[in-house]
Image 1 (spheres, rainbow, N blue to C red):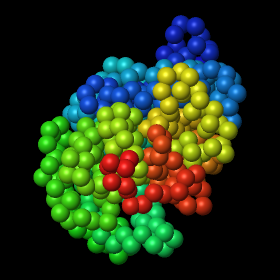
Image 2: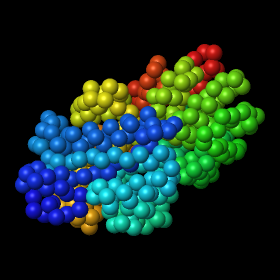
Image 3: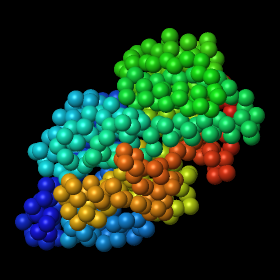
Image 4: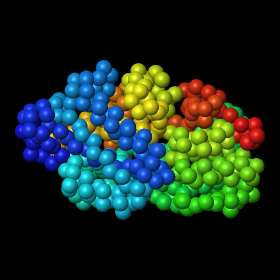
Amino acid sequence: GVAAACAPGADTGGGGSGSDVVKIGALFPLTGASAATGKKTLDGVKLAAEIVNEDVDLDLGLAKGEGLPGLDGSTIQVISADHEEDPRTGASETERLITSEEVAAVVGAYFSSVTLTASERAERLGVPFVNGDSSSPELTEGRDLDFFWRTGPSDRTFAQSFFDFLDDLNAEKDAGVKEVAILNENTAYGSDAAEVTEEVAADRGYRVTGTIPHGNGVDDVTPEASQIKSEDPDAVFQASYTPEAILFTKTFQQLDYPANILAYGAGYSDSAYFEAVGKAGNYVISRAAWALDAVKDRPAAVEVAKMFEDEFGAAMDENSARTFTAALTLFQAIDEAGSTEPDAIREAMDNVDLPAEQTIMPWDGISFDDSGQNVGARGVILQYLKGEYKLIWPFDKATADVVWPLPPYPER
């Protein structure tokens, strides 16, 4: 492992060839309101590293055999950092991971606002940053970074999926959806989701009754929820993190207004949300980049989900599946590069071309355009039915029928 030994992110460990370690930074919210989600995202990265490091009988890249064959069997060491949901902390922790911990690359950071600053810091330091779980279109539109890649869909892809779903709902179920409202948290994730929803709504001929931003860490959302109730749109697009998703559900319940929520994941993909709101969370509709339901015909995906649950004591969810995929894609690129040199990894990432079958995702595969966006990423639409998310769209792949409109709260 001579090449690896003198490269950043490699540690010879004193045992000569085969005992080299490739360090990877994992930047997530590990304290604060989204800590439960942060742990799951980190667990996704850890599981990907484990599949590389151990000999696992799985039909996925690098599963068979131990370590990275392109780097003489070097193993992956995941070094985690907590960005505390703060963009400045995210940038400084990224710098610490790169300069002090000497990581070869960074995976993160769930919050789009943090991914924005952290990836810019990594760019300045010339080190790869791979994202699987942030959806702000701004991350890959107009930034022109050399060292940033996103494996998951952006909210532009998700918005298009949502309106495809509404078109089909109108055509096949005679739903009569014409007017939509948008409810969004006011940082990069929510603001960009709102903007792209407005654009796609206009393209598709839907009227937006109002776009209502809200703060994070607030303790009352009655004015915003009341405005939605008075506008009474046919559907409500919502982009909120966990605490506010809980608060809005409880407030809509108090107002006795069963909003037809179309959620941009985030809080609505967090098990803590459903624990907090109980039956009121039933029938919520969310976009997702992954659902076990959507990959039941893919043995590797089913097996990875089982491994995740066995190891971490919780079901794999969309967020952990997305970070698992981002990390495994990065590890395959490092192996292909046969080096931890940033430029070698960059070239390998730019040339990634994974067919759908070599991922655990319900996508067309993984390959990147010039902006670092995976052009194969796709969205599916889920509805929370009988205690779990079921695939309701595309209709031809659905495992459950959509319930529309959403029932009044007493009937949930």
